[in-house]
Image (cartoon, rainbow, N blue to C red; front, side):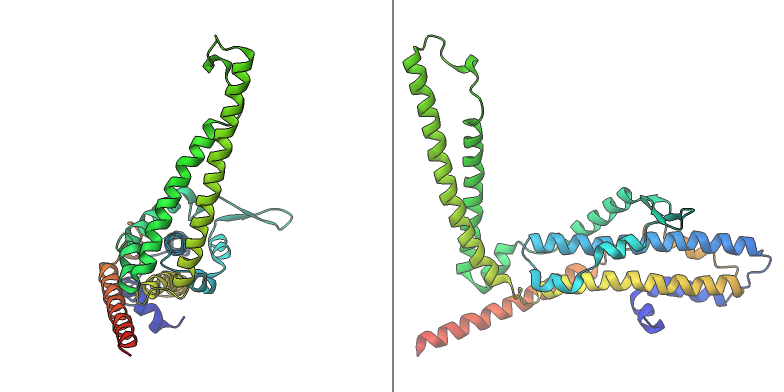
Length: 308
């Protein structure tokens, strides 16, 4: 990534970085410079990890919500390696790298919580899938509604089948039953369970058929909205790359440059950077407008075909 791209993705951080050229770092010993660079690198890696993990969560959650498909996910392979490269590590005597459960001395679990909260905040600006699809295809929107109802029905049937499974607790059986009556009770219990499982099988097949139909429709994505999600994932990954480039420049300037304002750079990481942009909601709103236009165009084409 070149310097212009870094400025585009991190204008506020880059502005602080340029201050390293403005003020003299008079009196800083080599040891102090090294300590600063070490601390700055930790903060930078933390922000890079949050950016990548936020993108990862957005990708997984958006795919689960069916706003993007495997088609959109495929270009973003390799999240695991990106995240692993940012982990703290120690070098053993045999030369092996031992990875720690920290990034910049902070627990990974803590950073994952921050990243997931940011991902949820971003995705909360998306409209419900059914509403978005209804604009393009009322038929598919109805299929989504029917599938969701079937899934709920299937869940209830599964719970009922579970209640009739396993060993029979004799304490729950009428103690005055004859042996013949008990056998009939067990037989009836097994029959009910088979009937429920048969219904569950039918519900599952119907839900899968609808799911296939929905997935086929959504594979290419929703005009505007799917691309908006992809753009946000891309932007977060580019921010992480930009932090890496910035980190290298800061190290060079601190170790070999003159600036007493260097320490102000650390303040930019105090709130974990990556504040959710106010423009994200606007981005999704614009995408929804594109979706509406696409729906109107499709409806117009359908009307023209009927008129022929």
